[in-house]
Amino acid sequence: MSSSPQGHGHFGDRLRNWLSLSGLVIMLGSVFAFLMLFIVDMMKGSANPYVGILTYMVTPAFSTLGVTLVVLGIVFKRRQERREGRRTPIVIDLSRPRDRRILGIFVTGSILFLFISAFGSYTSYQFTESVTFCGQACHEVMEPEMVTYSHSPHARVSCVECHIGPGATWFVRSKLSGAYQVYATALDKYPRPVPTPIENLRPARDTCEHCHWPQRFSGDLVRTYHHYLSDEENSEYSVRVMLRVGGGDPDQREVSGIHWHIANKVEYIATDKSRLEIPWVRLTDSQGRQTEFRTPEFTEDIARHEIRTMDCIDCHNRPAHIYKKPNDAVDRALAQGWIDRSLPGIRAKATEALVQEYATKDEALQRIAETLTAAYPGEPTILPAIAAVQRIYSDNFFPTMKANWRAYPEHIGHKDWPGCVRCHDDNHVSTDGQRTISFSNCNSCHLILAQGQGEELELMTLGGQEFKHPGEDYDPAFKCHDCHTGGP
Ligand code: HEC
Ligand code: HEC
Ligand code: HEC
Ligand code: HEC
Ligand code: HEC
Ligand code: HEC
Image (cartoon, rainbow, N blue to C red; front, side, top):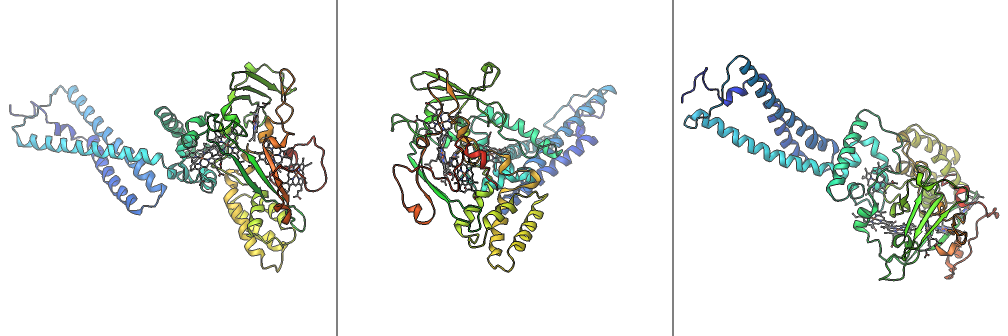
């Protein structure tokens, strides 16, 4: 069974072609590169997205390329041999030391490679699930989402826990759309701002409800909304509100309050993409009775529209990416003392400076400093105030991505966006004409415990006060968001 050049070929011979040899070099090189980078990544401990991309995406791609080249080389070589009439079956003769050696190297090499690949794909998988990858790798595109997320109550919840959730189908769906997103980013084809709402976002019951038990009775929440007027004195006008959040589990307490919507099925039709126009609502109560509400203007056939079932996202649509409204952010800075309230008219001027059109963040920060310095010459406290306004800008405005509060409507509340008033506007009438979804009954959602400034805020009325709007009375036909926009 001796081998001869014309007789049987060796496997090692087949590897001797340019394609396979270069493939081998690429493969070994990338495995070493992977190991090196992996050690660097472990030792640095810091989450650098570029090391991550190199380690877990680029080097595995090269290993795969290497293996493909090796195999292709062998296939071509065989074809060539066949064409030249040298059909030579591989014969491995274990009695020959050379064959034993080659086989040994081959088997050990394969096991090592498979092991490293398995380990590599696991770490690659983990990496593509990390906040670093989702939020920082495509730095410019995701900067707005990442920055606002890191200031939110969910800053310790990873992106995938809300955007993908557990289970294989959603995992595959997300990787497929992710692959398209990598392509769109590489070719600069993505829209600015990144559009919202996300179409086909995984239903909240699979994500939010993984951590938040929806039926939990939250009880009443007391919140103070600090506000200042745009007058010379920056007069305070704060509102202390008790929100009747309630709960949705009849076994615990009565189903009541705002979270009543979770225990009852509420469906709706939105006629615009942002879901700001809701002309039709259908309620199915716990006894299975259905009530349809629609606005008088909406006469279309409902079969032509998509019907959505209300879930957490229809109210809590900004739990993680919170673009603060300039008014609220400046009010917060005044309440905290970061901006000196004794600077005349600073509330109006600071908000005005924030909402100008700026091309880049650097330009914005510089122009904010210039405008405010010029408006308050010789005032020492303007310096910390400028720093506070600049910080508000950096955290909430992203000019190159055109992302700020205006691009992302918020559905909770009703002051600056329609929110609850999309349905609760006294204008959605039930089919029998007997009921409307109410707004004017303010106390069904909250009690105003105190309002105004200074001592007025200590005078709490547990039964709830009538809201006293600052300034002159306005026509009650107006809704709050007709005048209030979150900006000046
Ligand atoms: C607490 C849950 C939660 C976490 C954590 C979270 N998101 Fe979101 N994200 C949402 C919701 C809810 C929306 C809005 C969905 C809608 O209105 O359809 C959203 C929207 C987005 C959008 C679309 C643009 C926009 O702002 O509406 C992008 C992009 C995005 N998220 C990226 C990320 C990235 C990157 C991370 C991690 C750094 C992350 N998200 C973490 C819940 C979350
Ligand atoms: C991985 C767990 C997890 C997931 C998933 C999650 N949350 Fe949360 N959420 C938390 C934790 C923890 C807190 C409390 C944070 C704190 O108080 O420090 C919280 C707080 C909140 C709050 C109160 C915020 C505040 O201002 O005090 C709301 C509202 C909320 N989550 C809604 C949502 C919604 C809507 C989703 C789905 C889009 C969601 N959460 C998904 C863990 C989660
Ligand atoms: C009808 C609108 C609406 C729906 C639907 C809704 N919420 Fe809420 N939720 C509110 C409002 C309003 C508050 C009061 C806090 C606020 O205004 O920010 C609140 C408060 C909360 C809080 C904070 C409670 C606390 O004790 O601090 C959590 C957590 C929460 N919601 C989770 C959820 C989850 C999870 C879902 C989906 C199962 C959900 N909510 C559905 C309107 C809603
Ligand atoms: C459908 C429920 C609902 C009804 C009805 C309702 N509100 Fe509200 N209101 C809310 C919620 C929810 C918030 C809290 C928003 C948030 O957390 O940002 C709020 C907040 C407020 C605030 C504080 C806003 C701020 O930013 O300072 C005022 C003032 C207010 N409501 C007044 C009224 C008045 C006056 C009425 C009656 C004409 C009314 N509301 C009816 C749900 C409602
Ligand atoms: C998609 C439409 C829709 C939206 C958006 C909506 N609601 Fe409702 N809500 C309803 C319907 C329908 C009812 C039942 C009205 C009835 O029974 O007459 C209701 C009832 C309520 C009730 C009374 C529950 C009870 O105990 O009977 C409260 C409180 C409430 N909503 C608060 C809110 C708040 C706060 C928001 C905004 C964060 C909001 N709703 C947003 C449709 C909506
Ligand atoms: C006709 C227009 C109009 C309507 C409608 C309106 N407001 Fe106002 N509101 C104003 C103006 C103007 C100011 C004074 C703004 C200033 O000085 O900065 C103001 C001031 C306020 C303030 C204190 C300062 C601030 O900017 O937050 C609150 C709180 C407020 N309004 C809440 C509401 C609520 C809640 C509603 C709905 C129930 C409402 N407003 C409806 C025009 C309106």
